[in-house]
Image 1 (cartoon, rainbow, N blue to C red):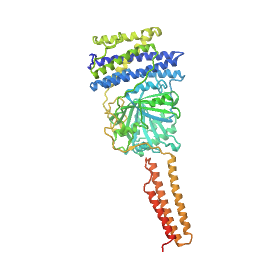
Image 2 (image 1 turned 180 degrees about the vertical axis):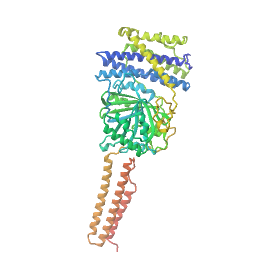
Image 3 (image 1 turned 90 degrees about the vertical axis):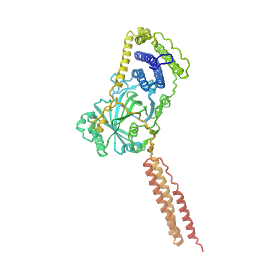
Image 4 (image 1 turned 30 degrees about the horizontal axis):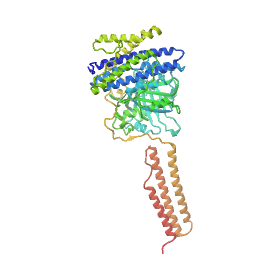
Length: 621
């Protein structure tokens, strides 16, 4: 057991901190329920609770940084970090989302996902900053839960299996963002779902006037391996595609034709937990956060070291708080990031090229992020906030004393609040913690809510049960589930399987780096205008030559022949230059597009023709 300079085990100090945080979460949930019952002053109290949530997230982020800095064995550090997750704000985010929706006079449940995307930006987020980031979003957007069942879960697992050819034809066109590039995947919402979605995405360049599309149809999860082999299963799935059967059948035929014609096979699987923020039936602003991202190839999995934040906005709807969020130190912008492209780059050394971010990604580094907190007016939360703040300051002083070898600070006095006493047994420690809960809540609970104590006990019991469930989940057998063949392994549950390492390159890849290049119609038109300019000049020279040949003079005719030859050379060069540039534009080659030697040669040829014509006009005698 690791000891502080005062002889107090770090585990006990962290236990004290985590316990107080769970108490604060229980109080937060009680305050949120009371706020929802208010008739007046709801907005002021909601904003105050948002400040309390942000304070909680910031303090738990700081304690995680403290744990990461401890000089203890890795296994102990992992255990402490897992234990710190008990203080998650998931239940508070869920309840505050409902409170915000009610304040706006909206329905809490939306059964129709009407997200209409106009502009998308993607960011990486340090896993230790997730609660802090969510706390900055929740004052403005509620947690969006599709088909809310009241379970207080704000996120759910999503798994996607992507298909490609042996030579990664779809990958290559996708990374270059070619016109008409397609991406085929099978997506499941929750790995125990009996229904999945087959999705076909088609990229359309902006100059075409068409929007990129994502079409999908339903399929029984148990039939996915057969569909992946190119087996016709329409008769078995047509009963679940009753909304638009004609369109679903057309899409099904297109997907089946792609699988058979290109010999598509599963190449990579992504599994992650998604939390979405959006007002029901309003898709003008939608924010999604993907955590616990793992990328699988058969039975080999790599975990992504960051969370993925995706901000989707309608054009011109960039509010100040969104701009502040996107420009904050909590996020790292990564334009056009793709889980599919990154997963293929990590697992396959034979991909034709790599995305631009691949060689730049590194494991997250600790950041010193300072957040300014407004005063919290709630009296019930003020006391527990003060105690947690004092305890956190004490832990920080202990850390500083350890670094400088100076006498340690005294433990803050906190009678009845559950601060560790080295002379007490573990049983009395637990009793003092329970006694602290009664002291912190007795005044307001007894007067404002006669059943408050029971609700608090239930909340604390729920927290303990969550901790037990998390502990059990870490002990689940995570051995790789081997199927009868490689294809079936992609469709086995992967959420609880142990990954084999981070999804980052061990050494920089020497593959070509592909940067998305946007080609607009004006680029093609500029190439055509340049060609026509060259052709116009060639026609002019050819016309002069033809006129000279019609004068009836032998010398003039010879001069005209010289000009016509020059005109032909200019025309051939203009055609070559046009075709060469058009090919590079179609390939989205970043350039250069200029010719160093051609203009010099053409000028020399033109001057030679002029000198020759003068020679024929005034022959030397």
